[in-house]
Image (cartoon, rainbow, N blue to C red):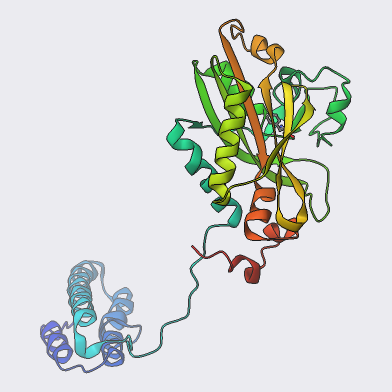
Length: 327
Ligand code: PHE
């Protein structure tokens, strides 16, 4: 078989004079494509005698490798050359939208920003929880009516292993007290779930839990920090009211209302001194330590802060709504 020795030189010479990408690909097809000399020579190999075949195949392979390398190098060079640019930089760019933080994330961060400098550690909690952490360790006795008020989503039949979607972030109180050293200052934001839905309630919403366990803490400390937090949050002096209430895990307990212009008093959080049963259940010496806890609904605060009237807007994925909260 006759193999022209100047094939590489010819290809190299022709490559030098190409003006466009299209010409390059044409040339490459001519030398390496299906109808090229190389391709047809390979198919003719089968007609040769075996010794000749071995020699010719070897030569053809070397030639093919050299040509391939030549075209690869030329392609790389061409891509770097400005006179063969394929990108028209004068075309207008595709419009693209930057996303922004969800308003609920913004409000969570705003709350954390107040408490973090006071040394409250941020805890993440479990959304799937056992009855023990969501109720029992929080002093909700079995069959206590307060359990019914929580409209719990049970994940399996209540009698078996009792997995549920947590109904409040107060489960994190128990995890923190059982795992951390005292004194304890913690804040825990997260999703909670209750079987409830209307303009002011959702089956999934967000709470932020606060817990302090230390020597000598009082209800006065709790009141002080919550009033200061609320005034910092809304950036104005607020009318704040602590209304006696009931939670199984705090005693005394209160709900906190703030007066909002013509809307009157609005409830925004629950709080109280940690019930001694809860502390004892977590092996805490109640002669030495006391605690206070609070839990607030983040959507509720976000609605007041941004003037949103329908809680469902937060989860509608409606860009016209979300674009009102740019970064
Ligand atoms: N977990 C309570 C609720 O969801 C709020 C709360 C938290 C009350 C901490 C007291 C102390 O309603």
